[in-house]
Image (cartoon, rainbow, N blue to C red):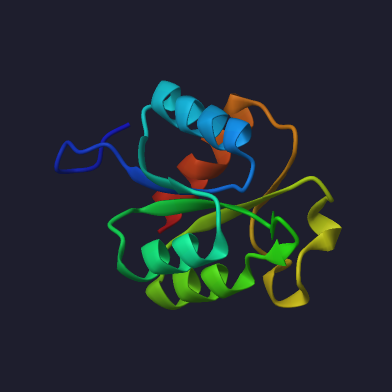
Length: 123
């Protein structure tokens, strides 16, 4: 999947579990996306969300007990589309983000493709 310039869409991955983070990077590559960065802490995610070059993001809701919402706030202000991933279900999302897309862990690559395609075509 390439944009009008021929570049692959770049996706920020925020996930605290290293194996899942690597799996997401592999999934993105297989789906035709480019991982822009894969980070595991809130501080790294905030820094990349502010200054990074990417078209969409995948955000784990819970980073080792810390909620991801400060990063979601930055992305919302930037107008950058994102999807939450959570093991707790969509009902666990903060009220002001309950209308955002979310994937329940574990999920399949076809589910990830569908949500990213929707996010990037509606952006």
